[in-house]
Image (tube, rainbow, N blue to C red; front, side):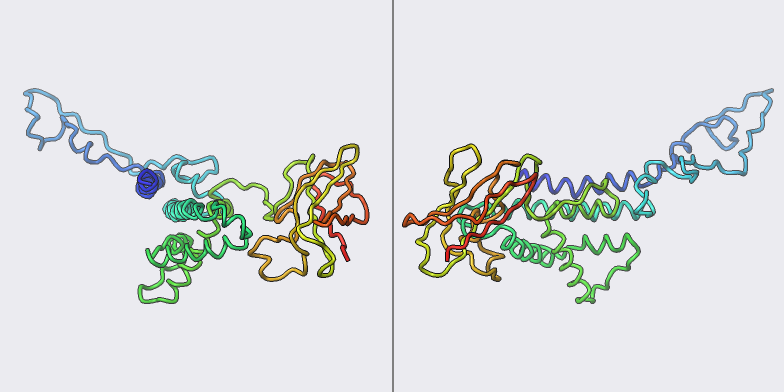
Amino acid sequence: MRALILFVASLFLIAPAALLTAASPPAETTAAAADVDDPDDPDDPDDAATPGATETPAPTESPTAEAPAADETGAPGNLETRAIAEDPLDLAPSDAAAAGIALLRLFVLAVVLERALSLLFDWRPFLAWFDGAGVRTPIAFAAAMAITHYFQSDALVRLFQAYGNPLPEATDSTGLFLARTLEAMVIAGGSSGVAKLMRSLGFRPAVGAEDARPAPKNDDEAWISVALDGKPGSVSFPAYVVIAPSGKPAYEAGTIYRFSGPQSFTSYFFRNRGRFPQSAGHPVDVGKTITVAVVDSAGKKFEATSPHTPGPRAIIDIVIDAA
């Protein structure tokens, strides 16, 4: 834990300084120039007059100041600092640096919150009883709200300021509450959500959109799910799902503990014990015909109305009528 705290602290202290240094032009070396010994300076006490020496007039500087180097677009400026302000940001270097610091703070807060809540979210009783996405979201949002309001975080306010929005007054409790609540929503979305925000603002390269729904990741994989629909007393639970692939022996794939029933509000928070699997899908081979059946505890068998031949990355929900 100490190592984690030190790492986060170093990110807050070192990374902002590095961004500000990269976004600032090099300082003038006036102090070093003042210490250079000028043999033609009459007021310099270190220079001794040489008899018979001819005084050479000092060269005069051109009144035209040297123009800064132009980048490949023809606009003057430091190439490193202008690289921060590329489209779609179109920000001044100082504003781009401030926006980068604010996004970095949001990212660090999101990572710390993720790792802290993983202790609860990876707990076996939690995984057994609750559906991940349905319960994790309100818990993460509540924790993020506590963090942003208790520590009076202003990362999102600073980000807005970098894009030209004025800071809310210290007495504007409503504005600060809304800003910190919105910041809590961003942090609760996790580090991947902040990374997407960085891509949207141009601080990271864009990638293809990701589907939030779980799905097979390979073309040689497909998913199925099995649920039972019937009248009370028609099935002796628990019931067992039996899958018979074409040319292969049948096997028991999982267990169903009740009828699936209509979808209710609680189904978004708890695992569906009337479905196999209780979340996501069961992988099957692509292009091979399968027959699905359910056998209850009394030995009664209920078969699907027809076999299925899944295609690449298919998601097939099979509902067997046990009436």
